[in-house]
Image 1 (cartoon, helix red, strand yellow):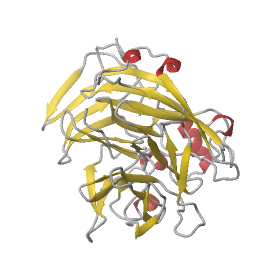
Image 2 (cartoon, rainbow, N blue to C red):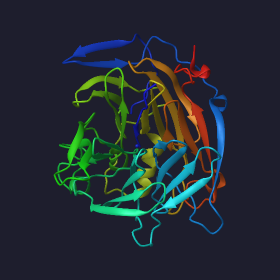
Image 3 (cartoon, rainbow, N blue to C red):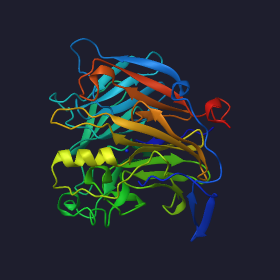
Image 4 (spheres, rainbow, N blue to C red):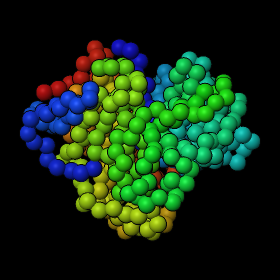
Length: 391
């Protein structure tokens, strides 16, 4: 099986009717249909649990964002603690924390990482810069200014390809778009992902067109996830925080298939919340509405995680856990499993598995000395679906 690279970020109705595919300008729209999804026991889905421990008096483990798997290592940004966490998959041991905040050549709030596993080059999308380190040693190499037009990059991880560094962030029409536009206009003129050459001067380029311009809450609107795919065409899988679909794009950026990801657990009250509204109102909106947190191609299937926030009155300093549900589809959009409860938003994926953090009593406050990472196999070593997902 060729190696897959995942780029590390909704209206709910019951699925009914037949699988519908409508061709239009080379694009097919796929809605879930006639196949009855598999009922999956969420406990049976976890095939291994890793205990990840930070050394005493060392930098704690925060809310890690999605990162790549390089060999037997997960490389994940930790915005709360201002580091990149490197976790070993042989024994779950934290191998190192790179770029500690407050140190020379340290980070501020890393949002996304792109890694060349072959050369051990690590590129970090930080608050105001893109910073280059060596992954194996944590040594600082170089830094570049972050382009003004790049929005938040917390939806997933990037990749290094053909001399370019690619991050899954909104490429905005102008640098003030997220701040000054009303939600109804915030995404106009934006694009998905940006790429630039590290070795040559030149303007960055955007990667894909938007899936939707709909924005009902500015925070999830800024979340973008891109995943490299090899089949049915070489190209991209993409999702947006407040979209209700996953797009399959060819390498030229043309959408080939649009997969409707609505499911019974995907809820919406059809309201919007303005960016200038107080945080408690935004948090209550996230309790009532599902948002797409992450998507990837795993074991030749589309895996999507959507969530709402747990109920409760949010107060400053309070950690609200996501109620995360996982949907699995074929690459043509047929649902395999819907609304499978998982512990949290995935921190990584590889060719066959999804890796999910469990923060335990530390919840999401960002100061844990120990967390767990659960491995969920989507496929098996033969390249077929894992038995729990088979009919």
